Length: 389
Image (cartoon, rainbow, N blue to C red; front, side):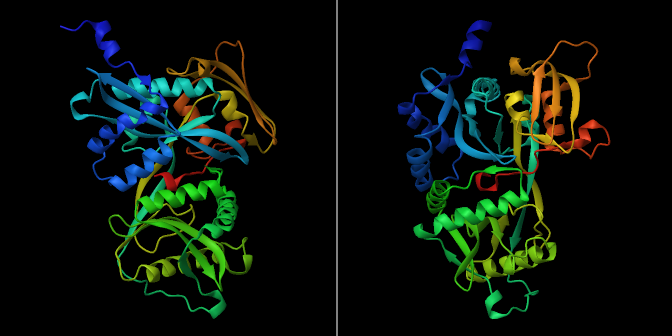
């Protein structure tokens, strides 16, 4: 019979050296069998060579894994470093042994020590991650489009929108357009640099897709990511309205409808087409299924709060309970001004207690609008990471 201490050691995670990352490929193939060899070649050459991987082992073999992929993120206008948690998996015979919990807690504590404001993931199930302090920051809509819309918009020639594949020389303009659109519609998203678009292009090509550009009279005015491993899929499709009419919501709605029409025209010989992850207000032409897209976990409370602000000066004190990150556990005074936020540890009794998960919901603005001091905070929603989902 194995002693309790030996059981604990059996699920104690360790971080692999970069040179050892390829050892996890067999686990990935076993658990995520739908992913092609072409995609795995891309991932282990371009992503796993730069990321961090936690594992647990059993009898000298890798039993479970968790990957941390680095991203430069725009958060409330500022650029910060964050990590996307992906490929949390265990071989079948090693499941339900506390391995995921051990790896997740270890990774969260390590990232918090670096003062990163948050980490994020795309959940298979929200219920799995809620006990670890994660909360849903955004949801995505998915729809299957089976035929070209019968509600085509009459267009003048200069308004006509069409798609074409992106070339290397287009990526600078695509990155600029992407950043501009998302800055208007989102508070937190992956920073849209040319290098970011190059990486996306490689990743989509590994899934038999790429980056499509939307154009009017040969002028780039939007973009989307595509994959065709299992038929055409499109995500993060976004396009500017005609004539730069950015303040008119009907102009955005019209552009969105033109965009869907352009996509169905482009993929007309390959329909049905799955469309998902459109930026926020956009409406899909058919009834859409909604799923959680991004769950967020606060790592370092002062680092997270300093990227926030309020319409006017706000101050309150809360006793924060964080069972994983000791540095977040305690009583904090929160101060928000129109320029920034601050979280300072204080000594005070009789203060309202709140869990780190509940505080995350408060700061993300996913609760109902409040009429108290909390309602004056400029929350950090919406989050937008559909290209990773």
